[in-house]
Length: 585
Image 1 (cartoon, helix red, strand yellow):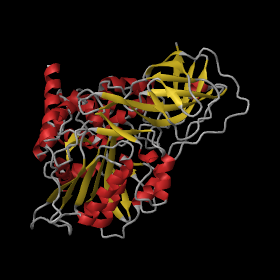
Image 2 (cartoon, one colour; image 1 turned 90 degrees about the vertical axis):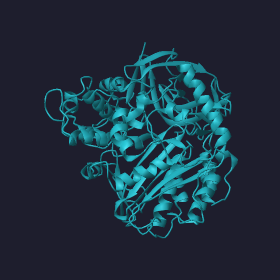
Image 3 (cartoon, one colour; image 1 turned 90 degrees about the horizontal axis):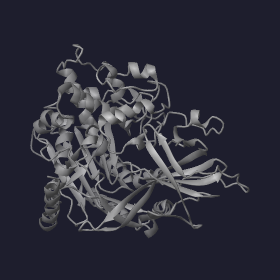
Image 4 (cartoon, helix red, strand yellow; image 1 turned 30 degrees about the vertical axis):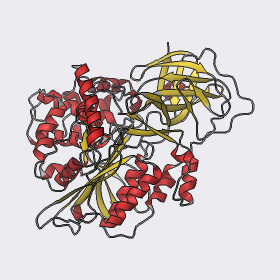
């Protein structure tokens, strides 16, 4: 069966390359929700930044001033730009993208449907939003015993467990395995004190659906949400999306010079420097499996046509209960204490939805990202209008989804347009700063090479490598960094093969202090799946303390929330204060 699926997938790609040459695009001569000038600006920006493909699904109520259909009819529209894959196929309304964390809304709504339908728990009680997680999932346990015992479904869905992200434990484990890992992970704040994004919460929520109904989570979503709405191309199965011949590829770049990017934006140039855009390539898809392990967290793959249908359903529920849509946009936690831009209000978090104000207008939104794919859902309920954006560019996906979203909202609200490319790029392109190297650095501990272990993160096998002065020459790639690491000693590399980071680089600084750099490395693929080289990018940086008995990770390795105080490097009680401690074996 595996061989058959592989053959079918390959044939689908070949057929798509031959037959799908013309995109389904909005005809500029026909009425459209967005002006032709805005569509041209979006495509011009896409070409400027070298972004491969963009799909936008829009929905406008018949009561909205911007709808283009007849009386009492909703306007559903798909706009497509650029290329979908390495075969040169154009993006169209059927092209499928991963919407990543925008999948979480399906999970929150599924739990809500079970609550609304009076689902009975194993103990005979009815499922409620206040039901305790420990009463449903036997493997549920946290280090904080009070939080572990009192955590309910609202706490999970609104991200207020006290647990930071700890995303680097993810390596394709089942939801039950991921949840069992949580007992070994450190909290960064107290229960219900701060908002902190946490994917593990939605692993738990999806597993609750499976346990209570004894059917796969994705089957429940298809039966009760996707099929009734008519979202026929949407799936949680990445392999099914590939076999359809419509799945997009994921693109990324190696060695982006953020300084060159910012200098180009600051000068308002029409063409960015080659050192900013660098070499682009595709690694195919973010997982080689069907991706169902990630179903409730970030596994949905969908098309522009289905995105428009989904936006309409959320604005005007006909399948979902109105009360449930209101429930997910009723907020419980503050995401950040201050707004990122003067035009924004403070962001608050409901159940898999953000709520904020944009230039005085209430907005419901969420974003999503997996390697090589980004998405943004945005709705303005008072206007009866919303849209969803999907992009297959890793490096500039965040920049684009927010820039395009704000450009669209400015136009439909008839507001004076702002230079969102400049404003967001200014915030995005920040060079990591490292302290000056000491003139006489203290030596590090001996015998650093070897295996280190954490019960949730697994093994880290450090191997020493040699570097030239200007860049780290790693066995798996040439990784050019955007800021000097001030290296004063040896460099060690560990391959960890997780979803969001594949390698760790440790560079000596002073005594037991090392800089750590999280790196994502993938094979660069050609049209016939031939490996043409490697694609490498820096994911995150921080400080490590390497001692005789282990490694203490600091510098937001664990992914704390924006309102949580940063951890401080501690050299005397490293094991106690580290965000994550890897024990040497």
